[in-house]
Image (cartoon, rainbow, N blue to C red; front, side):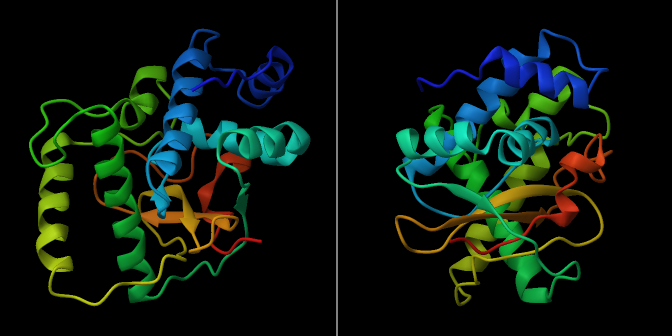
Length: 217
């Protein structure tokens, strides 16, 4: 994907996260490109499985909106947006959040030609926090993710669809995009999941997914 984050944006990123190594930007930028690629592969609601990549996403929409808008338009044809959401998710919203994480798992595996039901490695996007040693990052267990995916495939075949808009709950969290069914409407929300450890809200308040939610313009 022909996207390059300019140096001036990375300077702002390291001002927010001064403890990160300069070499970490390569993995974080690759993760962000992978996340955008999911939306090119198929328009769905996708959980963001990396606090490090999410921190870059927050920076772009908060401080570099012009660059972010043009990047989204040139890459996706529409803008991925953040919106506030209710901090206490309903049971239906929690189910939607788990579905979003599994959407990301399936798509991330398939764009790397991995079998989501039987892969021996994590897709790149699910490894970023571990690789860059992100404080309070999301660290996934491969067997658990595969088990969750297989279980959700079985359960979803017997249940009605859940809404794509979702919100955060307590426990481990990761941000997500929520596709609204129109080619020009997408939003960013939070996903509760069980495939991680040692994660609460990212390394700073700026990247906390507890304040992000569904619904797009």
